[in-house]
Structure formats: structure tokens, C-alpha cells
Length: 380
Image (tube, rainbow, N blue to C red; front, side, top):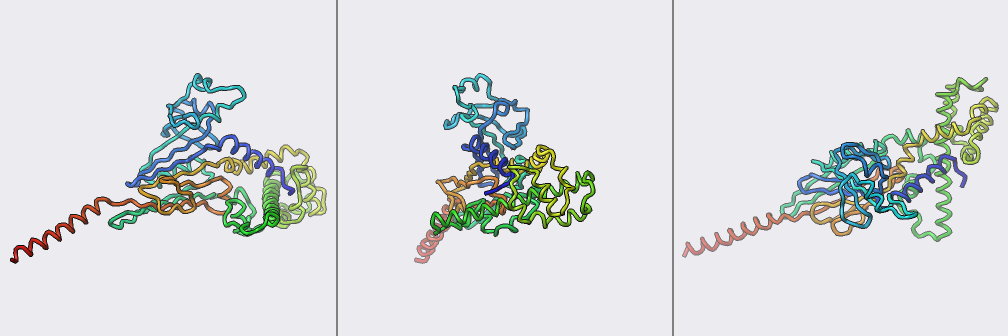
């Protein structure tokens, strides 16, 4: 598959970061019967994060934690928690030749909330508004038991700013969902060869989408920043923007390979307009790479996020939605790219048995039976 330079850079960085830092990443959410809740995030820290004073905010892997978060650390695989800040002596005691101390320890940040709305707003702030979190908790009282329905939705609110060309112009909604989330399973029942053919076709569509988004961003940047530098432009800036869609959806953009040579952007523009006017704008390839890096920096940060989402609900879980239920814990697989095709949804239902309702019912039945025999005895 041919793809653009930025796509290679971002995927490489994302794979590097997730493989190095996210194997043990976890976000544990605990919902209580009274509606209060807590959230704890665990991750492999760098020294400056785990050694920071408690009166200092910290930033780790694009997560921003204020001083209102409790902080502890532990050795991976050990349940014993140690207070932060970690000392240099403690860090050095875990150092081994050719071993990364960061991969051996986990930092835990925890905060309590009065309600799930406050908790979801906090998550939006923690991730620097890369996505918006909304949550609700509904109670359904049914005398002998109470059902709790927890829902949380994560949504990229400004995806159009990251990807200016809609994905559905290249692949269908179901295909996009399958590529980024695995659902619906379009490969079910296919042979290995058929699956490869399917994935190759989807990959080509995704590649064209990335290339089109990149071309669209570059055209916008040229029009808004550099158009006055173009000598004898074949069209006005307004016409250049009006014709942008024809360029980004062209076969030339679908087949371009910015990883090899970013100057081909100028060649595509020149061929489209039958002019050499745009060549000069692409003499400095590194400058354009910096433009793309800035443009897609938030996407890169998003791809770095891949914690396991664990939820503990009141009572017994009766429906984990799309999560895996293991006793009282419901686990969801999450990664930033899962937000691209549609919002990420967590839905969990649990049930709490109302022991007092059984006691009250027993008392009422006992009183009724006692009253019946009492009246019967008095009538004799």
C-alpha cells in the first residue's frame, strides 16, 4: 500500500508508544450505590512524573493531573502501594543493566467524585479535550432489587478539524467501524485469502482518506498562509479553494507517496492547473513535515491512548454490554482510533438485592398471618 509520510510517522510513533507504555495501562472506575464514584488511572511513568512533589501538577502521555489527584506507585505485578513522590534512591534500587525502570513500575492516580457527571467532565479535562466524555447513572427501584444502568460515551468533538475530508466518502460506515473497532465482524465466514482481499481493499480506502486529508490540509495552508508568495498563480485564492475538492479526490492524490517525496504535492497542483507556479512552495520538505506534524499532533496523542477500561458496579453485573464480565469487574478494550468512526460506548447494568425489602415483606406476611389467627381465635 502506498501511503503518505505523516501516516507512516504517526503509526510508527503510536505503535512505539503503545508497545512501550500502554501494556499495563488501566483506568479503573468504581460506581457506588449512593451515586458517588471514583476513578484511578495506572500507567508506566517517567522519573519526573513519579518523583514530582504532590503540590505540583503532572503530565504523562498527554494526560494532565492536578494536585487534587492522589498519587501512589507500585512495582508491576505487586499489589503493595507506595506513596509519591518516589525518591531517586527507590528508582535506582530498581535499576538493572539493560532494563527500563519505567517499564517495571506503575504510577496510580486516583480521585473521588460526588457523581458520574463530575467524573466524566474530569476525564475530558484530563485528556486535554482530545475527546469529550459524558456519563449517566440511572437507578430503577423494583422493591426486592434495584437495577443500576451506567452509560459512558467518549466522542471526538472536533474530528473535522483533524480530518477535514469525511471518511464515508471512501469506505462505508460498517467498513470503517470494522477497521477501527473490529465490529461488525465483516470477515466472519471468509477464508484467509478472502480476508486478505477484504483488508487490502479497506486499507487502500483508508490510505486514500489519509492522503486526501493531508492534501486538503496542505491546500488550506497554502491558501491561508502562502498564496501571496505564488508568482503568477493560474487561479485566484478563492478559485484555488473552490477547486480543492476536485484535487483531493483525484487519482493523483490516491496514488501519491509523501514518504518518498513531499514535492510531488507541487507536481500534482502543477499538473492540475497546467502551471509551474506552485513548485517553489515545496523547496523545503522539512517545513511541510513540521506543518503536518502540527496539524495532526492531536491525532498522534489520541493514538497513544490504549488503557484497559475496568468498571466495578454496585451489586452483581447482569449485562456488561460490549465488555467482558469477570466477577464484579467489566473490562472494555479501548484505544484512541476506536473513536474515529463513531463514539465509543460503555453500557453496564448491575443489580443490588434489597435485603430490607425481604425483611419488610416477611414482617408484613408474618403480621398478616398472625392477625388472621388472632381474629380466628377471638371469634371462638
